[in-house]
Image (cartoon, rainbow, N blue to C red):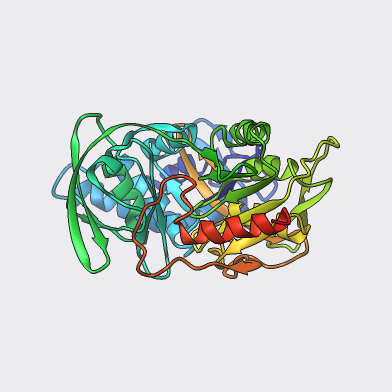
Length: 413
């Protein structure tokens, strides 16, 4: 996920107008003025502009359906649930997997996850909208999922009674979240074998960054997601590695789905001079630049960046910038190719929200990323028969081993 927040959105008051539209024509204005700036109230009459009136007519069919359900449905309908479903359907019509509606609970949980602590089983999942598969890309340390034997590379196929695919993954996540101490049943596919697990939910603490020394001169930092306090934590752990004698760094962005662009920007600033990080292009053709800032204290240390097919979004922003500026050797396989940017913003007054794709981005040199990805300088593929979930910094990890060897070359070893 690659999200971008911005203040200053104006939220409209269409819900009131929709409710007026078909509840009785007497409540509609008897005179339509094209110059009215916003609704004008006079007794039981609301006067709106021609443009607003024509906009409301587009929602007449939805209101007619709501009234039919309200009168004839065999049970008392949950009107708020219907409105949530309508909001989801409105955005679903864009046919964009990165644009969607959060109901109140989902929006709250999203921010809880960004803070790095939540009640669940402790897995990170990558949805592939081309295949529909939901792959486990990370099992958190000391999590319930790790305790029962769920592994990186497993494919989530079922949660309780829900058959899981990319389009309903959020529903599966909502089920796996819940009360601490309560069990949830999940099914994974490992190769051709289906495995069933009963996992007891617990408080999961998300460590966004982890690090160690690979030898006495090469440090290793694994950055799992651009969220929470990842940027300051990255800085602290990088300083610790340098203090331990690191002369080169391997930055592991494998399976990193992205996150907040501001965090990618802050981490890029540690290594790059003032300039352009990436370029946004909007629907109307206008462009905006994510800029690198400088305090003249960029860290001049050789870098190797490790990516894979699940490195997406902000991971591609960072690795693409380091590649464009010839600041790092990129090792791995072609990255995921999510080169679009989303706003995340609240909607309404109940605490709901939405995520909306607003622009496509390009690397500093203008290279396209969306559905293309970042091409590595050195190809390092994951062995097909390797099902191991390696411990941090284990050089038996074939991809990490190649990245380590490239770091050795940068040191002339």
